[in-house]
Length: 437
Image 1 (tube, one colour):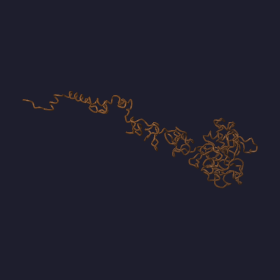
Image 2 (cartoon, rainbow, N blue to C red):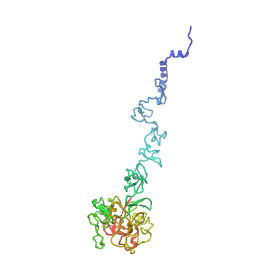
Image 3 (cartoon, one colour):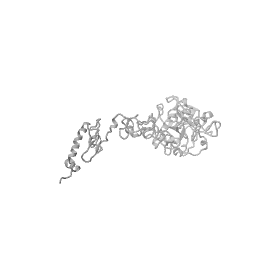
Image 4 (spheres, rainbow, N blue to C red):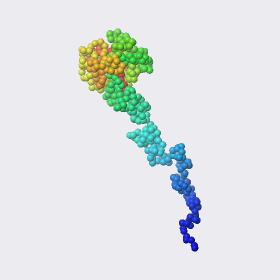
């Protein structure tokens, strides 16, 4: 009996699996070759079955149509180069032409970005959305800076009131970690600038105790510690003026032995060069311009420019540190028959306080308060050298502010009053007050 024809059975008998695979592969071969091996999927006829993008084996490294090399991704030796990053077109996930995003190289400065990882300088400016490499002069808070162009261990230290995270971020060496702002150190006050911002100022004149520690530190009297104008200043030890006309029975600074009875009194008989050197040693500067630089004589009573006048006058609003009119019950001076007339200056710091900063209530000084909050003895007591001078020689005149205990004219006790003395002059009624910016 003749068998019935079965198409499926006959197909398998006649061709067979192996023969069928050979025929299909042979038929498609010309098509793959005519396209240069790219753009036409390669049909895999042996396990695993599937399609490989680009018509190449992903585990091999062969030239692509633009000359790039597809790296072996199975070994992790190199990241594959995406053709998208070399086509000179802004496409895909790029943030600028052929750069940025998750696939392409980082962008150079000036190119567009959305995150720091898009930029070769590792910073994307949020306002302009452009890459930039942070510097300490670009007037932008970027990189590791804690405030604009300062802090973070990469730029200079920040001034009072500016952002910080650590004490080392601040010129004052004190960071208020609650406010994240640089603060004034102990025994200094914060003074607001008339033009915005702030600086620090000693709340009282520098005391004998403060200055004694400077002397005992044996700081060399060299140009490193002093400006060139002080080259002839060979010692920092306070001494009365050799001019008999300015001597009085309180002229002499206490002797070199331990100062057991007068540490809290303001230091006197120091010249301008001594004052500059002491303030530098203490991590401060002699008060001058509100920028921290030397002041100009012409700006001596401009609250927007002169640090001492700004503090005494409460930004130019007061005639005297404590108000608009002279009071004979406020500060230690001889003007207007003050009840505090007497030899020598006084202080509101105990001997111990001169070292650890513990103030003691002293009526005569606590009433001599203002114009900045916490500022004492800006009128009377002893005058204070200022970093404002007429010239650059050792004989050039520099300004002394604040009047003194022996001033008999009330006008000499006003915030706008000034004396001029030669740089190397030493007087029993002149001392030091420092600033920090």
